Image 1: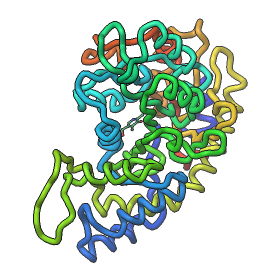
Image 2: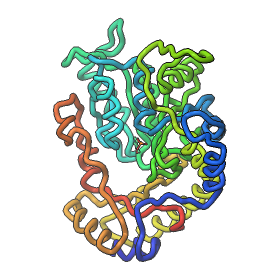
Image 3: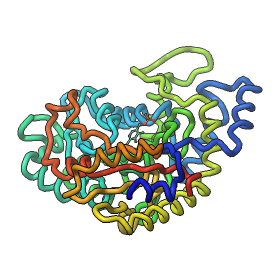
Amino acid sequence: MITEAVASVAGDNAPLHTPEISGNEWEYVKDCLDTEWVSTVGSYVNRFEEALTEITGAKFAIATSSGTSALHACLIVAGVGREDEVIVPALTFVATANAVAYQGATPHFVDCELTTLGIDAAKLDQHLSDTAELTGDGCRNRKTGRSIRALICMHTFGHPCDLDGLKALCDRWRLVLIEDAAESIGSYYKGQHTGNTGVLSALSFNGNKIITTGGGGAVLTNDEDLARRIKHITTTAKTPHAWEFVHDEIGYNYRLPNVNAAIGCAQLEKLPEWLHQKRALAAKYRDVMKELAGISYFDEPAECVSNYWLNVVMLDEDKIELRDVILEALNGAGLMSRPAWTPMHMLEMFGKCPRGDLSTAESVFRRLINIPSSPRLA
Ligand SMILES: *Cc1c(COP(=O)(O)O)cnc(C)c1O
């Protein structure tokens, strides 16, 4: 049933998401090698950053060595430190929570909503009313005594989360809004590219994302001072000087190498074509899933345009026990499929972190399946 339905769209053998190398990648990388501009300075880094600002509409883009390092840089610049908590969705890739831990801070896990798979703003507002208070120093967790500094929302599998609701909530509770837009290049919320509502946003260009640089990421922001801060701490906090080494704080080697940026420049040229293909693929899956009982295709939220990074099907509540049987069948048939990430609070290192009720995240974890989603399958 579902195996046949997925095979009717994706063919006999299909990885979950493959990098597509079909444009100017070879030419641009060869140019780096020929000119010996291979490392963390070079024209492709600048070109890549410019292209990112054009595509996303963000004023500034700073390329980084990974999406994780981009997230970490966002938290540093947002002033998150030890003794702070950061609101993080329980349903996310582990890097979102890890970046908080890198700062010595504590992730505080909250639930998602079924319409977007992102943070449920209304439920979080209620949870904060129950557990937190506003003080002269911002939001404070009454139970742990720690400050809740920031909120990282995430656009799950490319579907934009409730940015208006979360922005209003962050204003009310005085939290810095950071978007983990690692999965959402090419996704729009009410006509605006994701990554423009948060004070800072992180993109990823890992090999399994829509756009890849091999490994890489970027920070987006519309604030010039923050952009300067991000650039500074991701390039070892070196002060400008013709020949002297002076570093004015502890910085990081988080800059994207020029060779990787060259790949990224070629990839971004293909983004419109791939987004088009991914919509076509989503339409095919939506169609074949209509015929199946007990399972439904997860569609882009209202007023949003999703990049459909990974296609999602959701089992009905009473079909939960079938998830692993279906995953076995799909993977056995060469149709690479995966469950959602194990929710963060169920991972050992985050088991004792503060959290709200996470019943929707737990339900989604037991019901969600990602199916093959490479653009070329369209
Ligand atoms: C991929 C991803 C990251 C991390 O990006 P890397 O480039 O692999 O470090 C962070 N958050 C989410 C939601 C992701 O999907």
